[in-house]
Amino acid sequence: MLALTHHGAVTGVTGSCHELTLHGPGGAKGGMLVDCGIFQGSEAAGRSNADELAVDFPLAHVRALVVTHVHIDHVGRIPHLLAAGFDGPILCSPPSALMLPEILEDALKIGFTRDARLIERVLDRIRARIVPVPFDQWHTVFNDGAGRLAIRLQRAGHILGSAYVECDATTVAERERIVFSGDLGAPDSPLLPEPRPPERADRLVIEATYGDRDHEDRATRRHRLQAVLEHALADGGTVLIPAFAIGRTQELLYEIEDIIFEAGDDPRWKQLDIVVDSPLAAEFTRLYRNLKPYWDEEAIERVRQGRHPLSFDQLLVLDRHEDHLKAVDYLTRTGRPAVVIAGSGMCAGGRVVNYLKAMLGDARNDVLFVGYQAAGTPGRDILTFGPRGGWVMLDGERHPIRAQIHQVGGYSAHAGQSDLLRFVTGIPQLPAEIRIVHGDDEAKAALKRKLEEGGVANVRVPGSQET
Image 1 (spheres, rainbow, N blue to C red):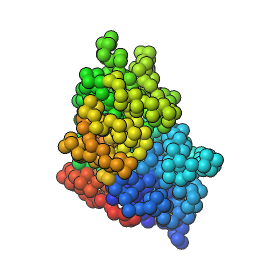
Image 2: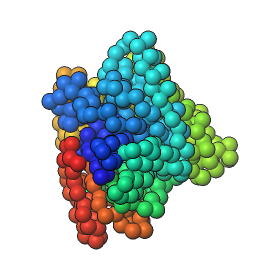
Image 3: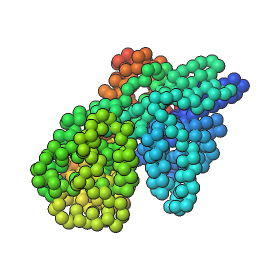
Image 4: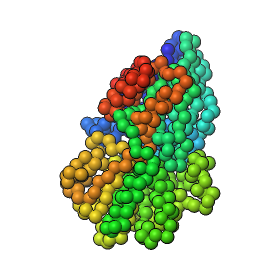
């Protein structure tokens, strides 16, 4: 028997963790996990920090962990997975292999310990288990009494190194091709090749972050981004963009560089500072620059032209906390136009909170959301109540919202509804079963309805721990 069990991302969009288990004769059993992330927003409400990070399911039969990509809601529980007894390899794409220790170092500081030596020991254990698996090549996970399991990683177009996972699973009774989508990207995302459907999927586990709507096309979202930046030029305000360190930050820099390039010698654009105020985002931007072979052809062509999409003259990177505090004070006091990209992406912590506390009350400023805001996060509250002149709680204090609030959904790193449907219908023979995960209830229900209207049978929305 081939069993699927879901340990996260079934009551919302965070905590991704899915298990594929092969049952062989005589009780032999072998399993594999796909991702092991933390819960965020309202999905973490009511849990203690220990509960949120706990790995509370059996691991003795789990031979490997496959990481689809290195966002924290897909990898944040890995240190706790090791602490619970997991001793298998961590399989991921080569770019993810480079980035994973970096993102987990940050996660360890926030949710585990500030002891630098202990953090380094944990990271050494993690590094020792990482096995880079090239895209489009089969890799055998195990082949014994439980059966045979091999995986193949394909580009998912979500962030650099992101993959969806094809699993070829064989027991004495059956053989199946099971596909885990991870997080899929939009077809026209900057920097990354678009995802292509698998050649076969008997069963498909697919995300539904935006299962109920589509994004703006790239031309529209670029036009809207430019309009927000021009507002900053006009009134000397700051455009504050809460963004995840990996993926969206680099895509935004890529698009902003192009807007400035197209403006030519227009002096207005020469005075606009672009600030990345996040040591983690700065590190991942450096890694992105070093991983140009994984960029798409458009981005590589810009490099051939002598342009530097992720390293241009007006880009300032702040690392030290002292420089961060000075920047908050300077931009709050002066009328110098600027764009600040800072984490966290859902405004639930990080340096963006200091900017928000200082700037939300000033109508000169703008807050631009470019990614999903989970229920229960300050980002969702700002997006919901800001346009109505409401307020938001930050660090236990109420802050009025007078800044202009914008959302450009096209810069989400996730596929929209039509993209998800194309991914499914692009499979030559439709899957016998589709499981929809990683989405709010409305998004999952909408995607299920659309799939069924398109003739797809046996579409399920599993619950927690469901097999």
